[in-house]
Amino acid sequence: MKEKTKIKSVAVLCSGGDSPGMNCAIRAVVRTAVANDLDVYGIQRGYAGLLEGNVKKMDASSVGNILQHGGTILQTSRCPEFHEEEIRKEAAHILKRKGIDALVVIGGNGSFNGAWSLHEEHGVSVVGIPGTIDNDIEGTDYSIGFDTAVQTAVEAVDKIRDTAHSHDRTFIVEVMGRKSPAIALHVGLCTGAENIILPTTEDIDFDQIVSDIKRGISRGKGSSIIIAAEGEKEGLSHRIKEVLKDKYSIDSHTCILGHIQRGGNPTAHDRFLASQMGYIAVASLINGEVATVAAQRNGKVLSVPFKECLGKKFDTDPQFIDIVKTLSI
Ligand code: F6P
Image (cartoon, rainbow, N blue to C red):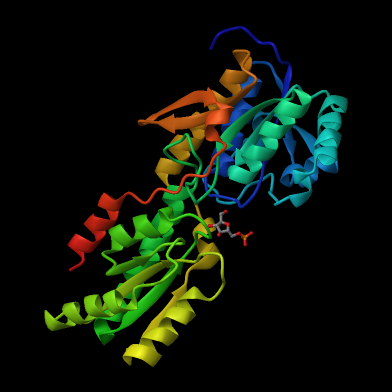
């Protein structure tokens, strides 16, 4: 790495929903900083912890034996107050008072927007590391935790398929994603789901769902799996179950996978990604950059302008949906 250090210290925090692999990213940030003679601090519980001054010095040993564990040793939080400019001003003051020159934020869209405002309004040097199981951050192909969440959900649906097949049953499996279709699409394709319902689907085409179920039955297939992204309104899978019963006399079962998708040991893919992102994040600060994201593009982790990663990605490639439909006939 080049010797162009302009900063002397860096702090790292996790923000928003946790995601498996965050610990790998923390480890990579801390060790890269230590290796380059920077002081490194961990901020507990995200922006909320920063506002409380919950900041601790870290060293190489602080991050020993953590990379394989889910969750985050720094803990995380959602901090709605950070939408207020006055609050961000206070956060910038705290960083200054503690002698912290730059902030690494591991999180999703809301967290990135908070970091960007901190930079724009108060000149704080910031680096984002994409960390959300939703994989919905613009400007990066993947975010840390998505692969693990998909793997966890796929393993669960495989088990549901076993029993669904044994009993000739239809299951509605609800996966995470209030606004993001990514988990539902990947899990749907990887489990041979007969139908996928996305967070944007306003009018569910029940006639189509039922016709798909009946077509399967007519060729001897007994089980059917509908993957539904949870969406913004709680209870989606139960509403689908009711309509299938009341309007079409089809019995079905529901299963909400919920927060198990956010926990567990990160997959090798997430560890691989998070370790590189943590390293690149600190390297970009050492190279004098002041507002970047360690993103993955075309298989490579690189430093990109923060501004390119502020939007929300809602990727529903029609070809992808067509593949799911074609393969599950
Ligand atoms: O972190 C992303 C996510 O897990 C979404 O998939 C989900 O909709 C949301 O967070 C749930 O958030 P919470 O745990 O705060 O209810």
